[in-house]
Length: 171
Image (cartoon, rainbow, N blue to C red):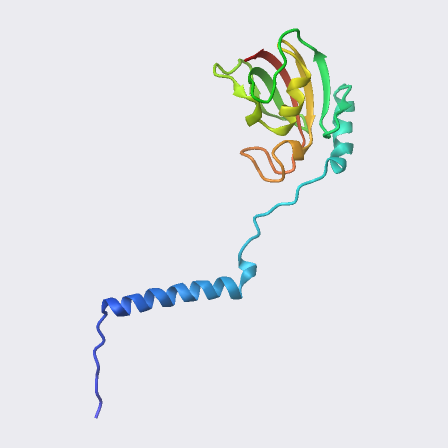
């Protein structure tokens, strides 16, 4: 004699199925850790980028000075107004390039609200205060003082960047 049992889905059984699915997911993550991609990246040292920085400076006629931070800069004009501090709002025009000369960003008119200097990349926080209002500076920013090892919009991780910056105003 064959006995057929009907099995109905009750809330208790639904909870059991959800728990089982959760358990399978957890075990998959634990048993197959190679499936999880490591999202961490490895930052490059300033010293490892010096040959690239020096080659760019030479090829582009930049008489760069190395700051203790590793930032390379050339002051084109000092300016005569106030100096920007970390809590200053700055109004600038600039061109940003990769080491192959490709422009990745450019601002030909200053932003009407300005930018908080302390909210910008470290290379600018260090470099902009080297000039005064009205001044112009060329910055070659090692990746560790720029966007680091992570991609940032169109900027690949570990990118050394060049900026030609004119400090229009400081508030």
